[in-house]
Image: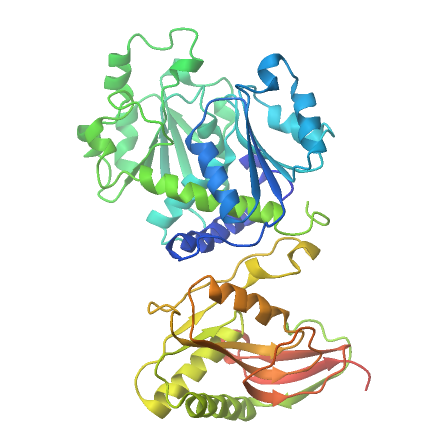
Length: 313
Length: 186
């Protein structure tokens, strides 16, 4: 793996290799020394042009557990706020010897530009770009699904996963639809018509406007955050109406199969897309998702930087 | 060593009976050296060190009664040649629940060659705790050490040339037991 820009670039074999590697690395948490020497002497730069707490910290912990040096570069308070371009920032990082750049950027495609413009030699990991993709989130979701519902082995063949909410602005939804369908899951996205992107009919998933019709046939349901910060227009009449028609409360949860799990990429708007009692329910796996995020990001960094660069595709 | 492509001749140097005798003898030597099996923990290095460790553990239990904790120790993340090849998939690591603190850890591998795997294993073990001592058991010692490492228990000393390969095959992985030398000048 040279870069990780989109889950669409991963075939099933590569995705399963990441999940298997993450499963082995997950055991590190139980050890007395939570550190492996594998990436000693490598430098990972967290280049965050957008606010993020959990993703940045998750990448930072993952890199540190592999003994890499981590540099956090936030756009706020840096030369970017003085008007420096992505190119000049990249050239600076290259001159400082970054082996990998983990980038989050409000513009869709910024990681692709960084990886392919010839500005830097190192690997690029997309940690969320605009409304495009967030591949490590999808990988940690796949890991969580496999761990909870498939005993942690193989692919997700035939698993019914429903993704509900603001699909239009969600990079998590796009990455998940691509990855989960590659792994054999049957994915359904549910959203009001105004929150579906154009071209959603070409995605490898089913689409519906009605959450209640798919609840009984969902092995897992993933609630997306309503992204108020990306909404310049009114996409639904009121928060109350959205919550009533698309929110997951305990009544809707009771319509799910007995062992179905509830997922959310965080941060949650309690009372909006998910009610507080559902969020705190034993079948809600948000805490697992966060823990698995570290293992999956370790796996990605290891597979990218652990071997020689030559011969990697 | 992988039982991969044979670039020429192949001769069997240990058959199934020899392998079984070697395992039994190693088990007896472990009991003798440590005056019993109290605090002995076996750690097999995947892939073929693991079934060997399990066989030695079964023998130890037969000889001395009681149970011998047996686990696996993947050393991939500790290798010194990671950067020479593309990143490889990890094998499983499962440390027995008693841990390794204060234990006599016996590392088990199929072939001892340069000693670099064992160097990595020593690093890996110390990340799990502080054993009282670490010993090394191998089915085959083929020589050509590149580090100051020597085995405590050897199934068979097998002088080889550098252009030969040693292929250990075990029932659990390969369907049958034997050890062969592949290639090299006849």
